[in-house]
Length: 130
Image 1 (cartoon, helix red, strand yellow):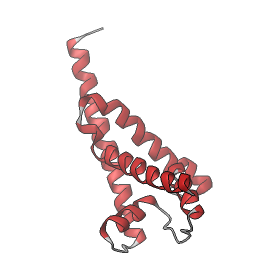
Image 2 (cartoon, rainbow, N blue to C red; image 1 turned 135 degrees about the vertical axis):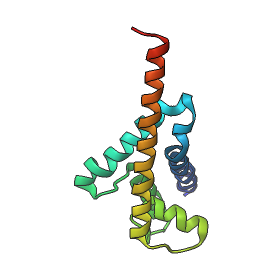
Image 3 (cartoon, helix red, strand yellow; image 1 turned 90 degrees about the vertical axis):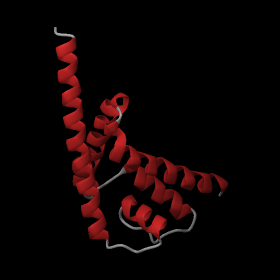
Image 4 (tube, rainbow, N blue to C red; image 1 turned 30 degrees about the vertical axis):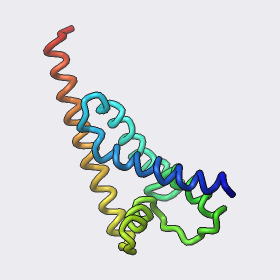
């Protein structure tokens, strides 16, 4: 049981860090390419893998829920974002509203990442023309 308690905390921190990175990773020049990759992988998981597992599918969420079930937590929301927001605020927000918010944030992060990465690439080409 100790390993499951550790994994529960690990996934909470890991998944939360990924969300923070998705929201802000485009801001730092040295993390922009990694940010774009993470956002694209997240979008791929939510949509393409979502065809088979349900829209918004996230392997990390699935693994975390399996751990929490081993700890006796069976009443988990369908998304990690709802779990995180509810856990941090003590509220029980509408799942659809949270899902819409999550998609909007992901799309904004993708848009910001594409813009700054494209700008960086153009600047690099001006400085070092091929």
